Length: 160
Image 1 (cartoon, helix red, strand yellow):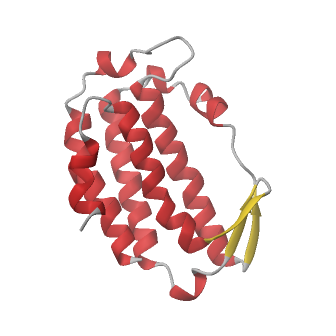
Image 2 (tube, rainbow, N blue to C red; image 1 turned 30 degrees about the horizontal axis):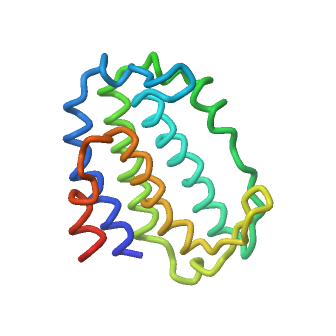
């Protein structure tokens, strides 16, 4: 899992400086009233880190775990990410994900075959959900940075 943790840290290392270049004003713009702003997308990624931390740690404690899903729109709206300071969101997102990489890197091998069912989907192994976490992150980063060639940025991470 050290390789998975390193992939996540490389994403943070490469993308965080790009995110910091985005102005608070630009990050607040919604493409349409029903679509998330960059702030809200990054807020969703913070929520994802929070929810996945729970999944990871709780799945380590049980051979099988039934876990509740979460209402992502409710989470984003309730926390008013649109009103948050962009630089603070970027810093929090980066720090939280450094902690997630620490968890992934230090998981005991014996826990990786433990399984989790999430709102009746699955079961998924702990190893799978840990590896899939960075893919989810990458998907949403492409929404925040649509003009950036993220495949190029991730090339040495995913094609090494």
